[in-house]
Length: 203
Image (cartoon, rainbow, N blue to C red; front, side, top):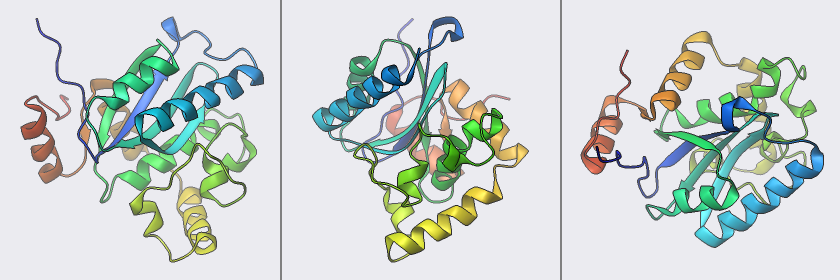
């Protein structure tokens, strides 16, 4: 049976989850995390990827990535590591900032920290303008929140503090587990036509 087409459409963001085999630890210590970020940055530069959000947990990684060329994401993830990878396409209109928030609130949901800024291995510090991060490239939707970096940080902080509700949480998890397209019906129809495969979650 032929493998389904990978969820890669030029210009469309992808939410990637990378897990260790059998959910084993991906990182042993902070040196491992630093090494992963170096590999991620090098791979992004080599394949012209834009990484908008990320979080490095103990046994998995979340990434929000865009590319202008189909196939480059798969190549980049192979370079970063041969772990189990799943992904979902993300509609930039309404759903993209929800995925930003979903990713950066992971350590809070895991009860590792009280607020996301307390977790060091995340893009939240760049997206809240707390420090520069060469890995992070803001998405156009993120940039459109406000005219300058300081105002964007304030607006995004309010968005982060609002949290992810149960429906958003379940919906995002279902889409990435089944490798589907997270978005409005029009976006899903476009993705289905482009990829010639089903992109709607099966309940």
